[in-house]
Image 1 (cartoon, rainbow, N blue to C red):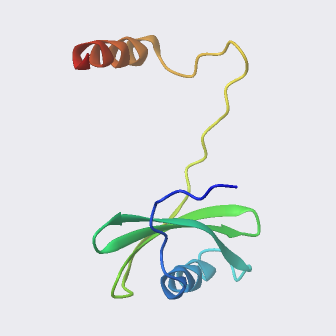
Image 2 (cartoon, one colour):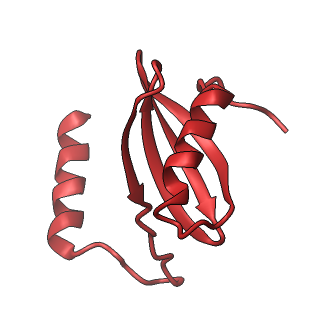
Length: 99
């Protein structure tokens, strides 16, 4: 299995995020699932609290900037279009202009 070259959050910052989520999760066990560096000083950490998903933003000094329930994306069924036609047309126009 190949690893990507993305920077992950240090373990201590992931644990700070997990502690910040515990109150919102009603005391459930919270586990960091993934993380990534957003810019030079901040990280995003995805967490699981007994099946509930959260996203935490923390800076490199250990200050938790935000904790939000993660937005779940619905999976499309084969042949189903989840995008409104206007959005799809706009995306195609932008892609064509970039070429």
